[in-house]
Length: 134
Image 1 (cartoon, rainbow, N blue to C red):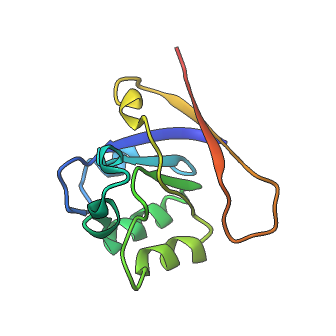
Image 2 (image 1 turned 60 degrees about the horizontal axis):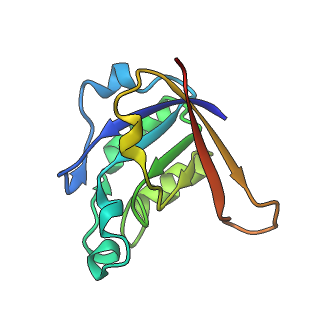
Image 3 (image 1 turned 90 degrees about the horizontal axis):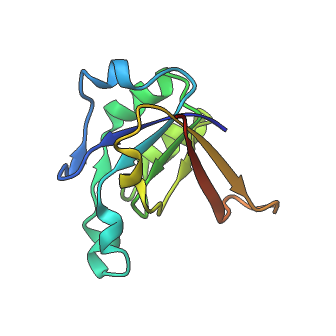
């Protein structure tokens, strides 16, 4: 659970650090990346040609003590999964295959709740809910 922010990164094959992220990403927040790639779900390129997060941006996310990142991709990176390791080793959880992130582009503020299954595993299906603060 936490305050969310969304970064509109459509059209970026490599999602790199931008100066505006210094003010957009607050400490201990939940950061969503909207690539629009969820529209390609089920197609071969969804898994082979997806954008990926640059390690420099991952370092910044870690420095902000981000709780969770969420992305509308199968993964924030590709083999050998350097960004995965960086984030998880620092306690930043990763939500993948999200949909409907475009609905969060307009609200100035929203809160995020993520409800995983209570199982012993390295990952879980979950329900992610955003509450728009009116």
